[in-house]
Length: 260
Ligand code: AMP
Picture 1: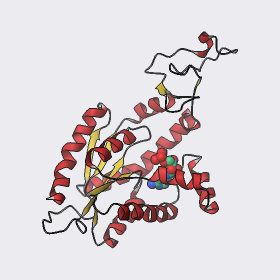
Picture 2: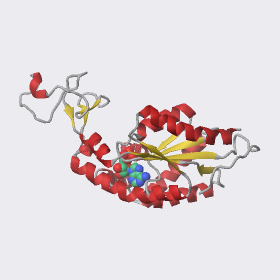
Picture 3: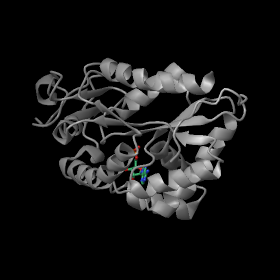
Picture 4: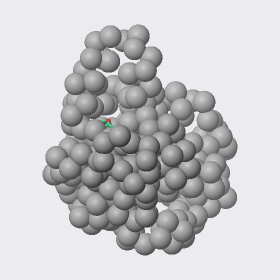
């Protein structure tokens, strides 16, 4: 994979575009950071999981939909051929739609070594106009993300109201008078007074399976970026604001180099 080199002669259209893949365990705070940084630097973000979800929603490619469904429902990684095909087509569209962008955030791609090699080949085919500048790894203990996931509850009326039963003091349904049956694992949304629900994805068995798969696939990917001097490792257990500052202090100088 090519490194970022200073190029003061290149025009806006053909200047190098820097890629910043994010690596973090499920519930590792990746979404929060990619959103803040995309806004802060005006870097368009490509989200592999969201791309798959929009294909599922669209439903026009029946075969692809069935394949994605069968893997995503189980929290398993989609096979490499499909991932690469979807990535190349959808990401190229994003690049073409943003000719003036200095770079792009990659959320959820690459997720393993095979995908990193596919990204490397894709960058080479772009004539190195696209180049991975830093892979940003949010290092969060797996016990911490497991607790975040299994404690997470969504409001059944408004899924944007999200809580954690280990952090927030919530009113149990059984004490509210809203439920006929006292439920030992059920709380109320403090905003809507609707029952909070545990997502299928956040059940302890599913979370454990996803974390084992994450570790197996991601460890070699982290080693690969680290050994190429392309890894920024950040303590993902710091506050979201501290994490953002650490990432910004690394990527601001890189983006300045290409925009001189
Ligand atoms: P996410 O939104 O990142 O949690 O992804 C949701 C699901 O999409 C994952 O559980 C996988 O099934 C699939 N997925 C997302 N990104 C990838 C990827 N890079 N490789 C394989 N499968 C992926």
